Length: 91
Image (cartoon, rainbow, N blue to C red; front, side, top):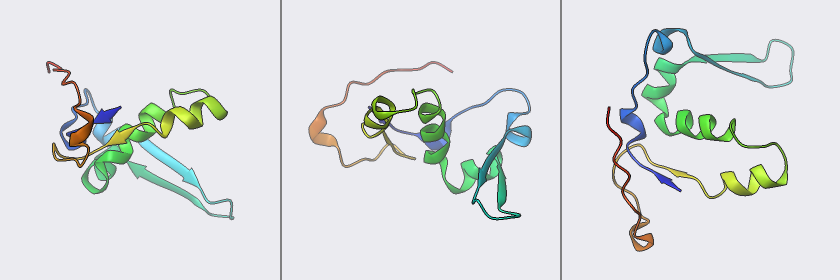
């Protein structure tokens, strides 16, 4: 699946300020937190990738499925030979 324009996603309510993505390095004091607003500004593709990845099952099937996901911040991508089908989403 190819997702384009990840930079232009819209969220409702106060999610930009309140939603927090956490990761832990395994070391003491290694918890890192990033708000959605900051993550969208720096890496907009990561937001979509994490959302889809967390919906998939844990195990070999989920790992195979996430490999087929391609996320691009803008409408430009190098997969023109694939001839993607456009899905219009109303906002």
